[in-house]
Image 1 (tube, one colour):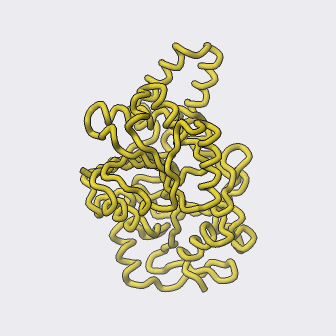
Image 2: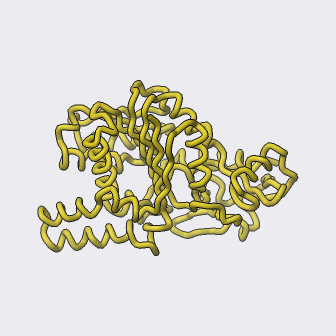
Image 3: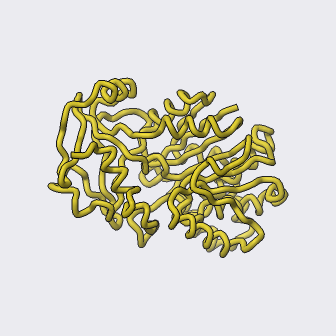
Length: 329
């Protein structure tokens, strides 16, 4: 019998784990992300970085870091929009990717080399231990739902044996942690506190931004599911998990209240949660689209409007996804 958190960690990050195989994202992959919809998602992040520098809340000599960059497309979009909007910053800002998976680091190097040649050469490393900087703007997309998690039901916790979920009495520390977070029934993610604390130890000043599919407050119900080729398989409707082990994505809604508490507990001064559509509009997505309309033909502009609508539509990504912004001065 294996505790569910350890089972998920092995499923996703074991030697033959699902993420270790660098799965495809997009129409031919298992799932979509905002990055695969339109480059204007990265454009909004770039615009936010520029605004932070203009208001002196971020140094123009800061390092811009993406956690979990998959194929490198998002950071490439960010760099391209910075080049378009404020090209001088490419002479002062540094760029980096933190990517623990070797196969993805190689994919990122190839993508960025094809995009920029030798003009831009971001640092691509397996952990923040390889980053030497005092000030950082750090962002991620769908990072926190990729952490392992336990399953909690009252005072019971899930274990797995031969692909079958079984329930046992939870240890007191786990029960207390779940109650502290308001979780009576659902997922208790593992590792958020360690992640936030590691950032706090490494940098003196940080602006951290993350987007993810998730909830602002506990629903006290299970959201864990398997994604396979754009199909969702509810975890508890399966007799056994074995056929899907390491062959499909296993995830759950990101608990933003837990992520916020982890950052505040690590010493961050503020941690703000907003829906994705509200956040992107405040980050200047509309301004970017207006600028694009001036430079692109009408038909091209209309096509991009359709793509951006998916980022903002409450029924699509707009409200299902949230943004957390945490600051450390």
